[in-house]
Every structure is written in structure tokens, then in C-alpha cells.
Image 1 (cartoon, rainbow, N blue to C red):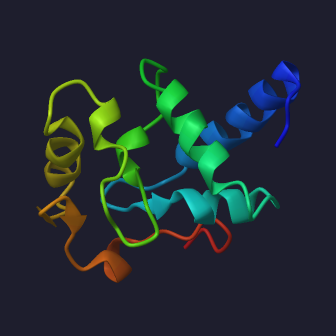
Image 2 (image 1 turned 60 degrees about the vertical axis):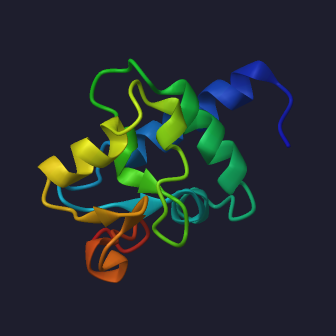
Length: 113
């Protein structure tokens, strides 16, 4: 893990650059972002970056979920169901905190397709 604060800030900004590219109606995972940054074992650090992103303009944190399509970060959003509501507003169905048809909604930042 990187302990230098400026390195963390740089990593977080790189995470946000990727998250800003996630198309509406698509989601990606913490691990996929880490892999795209060349830090495949840093999914947890991506999660920390997402937790720190609330309130930042243009960072759609609701589009980042765990590798199984679970809304694992939903408790970091204001209001119990805000993350789910934001996703559903983009046409993504969520049942029991999990994205329905996850594979079809998944956006791979490495392929950017």
C-alpha cells in the first residue's frame, strides 16, 4: 500500500478520471478500475477513492460496484437507497442490492467499450 499522501491523491485522481468515463447506464467494478490503472491488487484502494469522491463534481460513484454487481458501497451514499435510485434512473435494474443482468451493464475500462 502507498503511504505517501501525494501518491494517494494522484492515485485517487487517476481513479476519478476513469470513473468519469463510465457511460450512463453502465457500471464497472473496483477491481476493473485497479486493473486499468496497472494496479490489479489495489481494488480496496479504489474503494477508498470512491468513498472520498462524494461531493466531487462529475464523479458518478454510483456506477462503481463490486465484482459480482453488488452495491457494496451503498452505505457511503446519503440516504439508504440513493445509489440504487441513481442506477435505476439510468435504466439499470437492482434487486436485493445486486445489479440484474450485470454482464450486459458492465463497462470494462481496459477495453472502453
